[in-house]
Length: 158
Image (tube, rainbow, N blue to C red):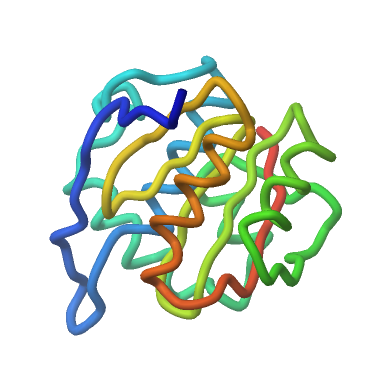
């Protein structure tokens, strides 16, 4: 078995010269799955792309204030700080160590989210797998094109 695409998405938005809604989308996906469990359509995240685009304009200004960034979306940081990660395996282990929470993780330019056997990336959509090995393989395949992973944040509902 392999990871299955649950729904496809794209990231064709900008705020001024800055492209994308990845942080807003990842954080709102995490909030929704923590509140209600798995989602099967983009609409179930609860915000359309235009609202995410407006929210992203604010979240960008808070990149150096992770607790405030989380608060704006209705989340809280678990452990009080961002963590350095160097691989998809590190992200999956954070998820294994924090099964009730979600993981927001990023490269130098792009943000995604993970929760046990689910991987959300606004560039491609939501993937779900029956096994951790299958979702980890899909995450490596997709994130490999983005450059190395550099950070992660464990989040829970406020």
